[in-house]
Amino acid sequence: MISSCLLGAIADDLTGATDLCNTLVRDGMRTVQAVGVPPAGFAVPDADAIVVALKSRTIPAADAVGQSLAALEWLRGAGARRYFFKYCSTFDSTDQGNIGPVADALLDALGAKLAIACPAFPETGRSVFQGHLFVGDALLSDSPMRDHPLTPMRDPSLVRVLARQTPRKVGLVPFADVEAGEAAIAARLEALRAGGVSHAIVDACSDAHLRAIGEAIGDMDLATGGSGVARGLPAAWRRRGLLGENASADALPPITGHAAVLAGSCSAATLAQVEAFAARHPARKLSPADLADGPAVVEATLEWARGLLPSGPVLVYASASPQEVAAAQAALGRARAAALVEEAMARLAAGLAGLGVRRLVVAGGETSGAVVSALGAKALRIGRQIDPGVPWTSTLGGISMSLALKSGNFGSRDFFAKAIAEAP
Image 1: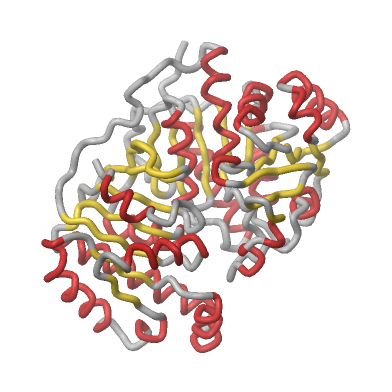
Image 2: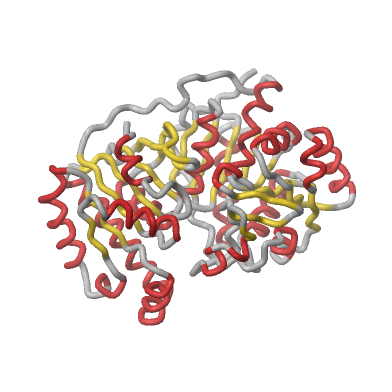
């Protein structure tokens, strides 16, 4: 019998959750993204998959574990029978967590012995070979992630990185087994389980590898990874009679209104997108130092947007170079600099909605979380993909809007303009 909610997933940030939802919808799973753990009395949406978006990537590990277990409990109550812990395709974490501690807690809660860990997403240039994570043709440690302000990634060996986060054994399903196919992957996983391994890093360099991994883990209670590893799961579940076909899984209601872009990410990809969009559209830059002076900057920005929106989309951004970020953090402190930007983006989102904006593109996980909260959305229905990892969504609860929530590192250089052109 086909379950209404087959997959329950927990994501450690908002745009990462949307990325996973996008992957599932592309493979015909009706998917809803809950914004935080739903409160008591929240009606379980009619969906094949529900992804609970947390904001747990960089909080203390104990808090991340507590939130993740609360999400798991809710998903169990919603009827889910398979579970997924989603984190970034660049394995964003520190030696204290949070990937290892959360994965350990979920294994214990589910009574499972082994889970895979695979952040590979070849479509966006993330691949794992011999346990080492590549971003494009560069090792993770040679990519811009080495200078991430919160989770600098300077060790490309995922076995080593994860082993520093958990007291449990970490093993590897190497390229040769993955290349050999699902039977070889399953055999290696069984051997690792028998050897007392709890976490298995799995190599993957192509979509064919992801499909083989999905088939090999189709009966496992828990998988962890980036959204790419979910590419093989819907097909595996259909072959097991757990999931039906759905050609309209990405259908969204049309919403009309002005369009705008808010960018808070400081990733190299977002900086390029800001530059490209600002060359053709009105754009206004905010800095933490300006925002520290009080709410007048946000109010002035909204007044600036008021006169421009009837003529086309506008961009407001706090994206900055690594040198500018370092200077702001030195002057204000890392936490305050980040909080100022998030609070400003939240106020801007609410203010832009008041000016008639109904199609909003947002760049950055933290920024997206602040924006969705400000709009009062309780959940998001997931629609068609714009670029790999980024779909349009529509809000459930709060202000009715179309949102494109982009992880900082995702999207082509012309993403902002493309997203607005393809809005529902």
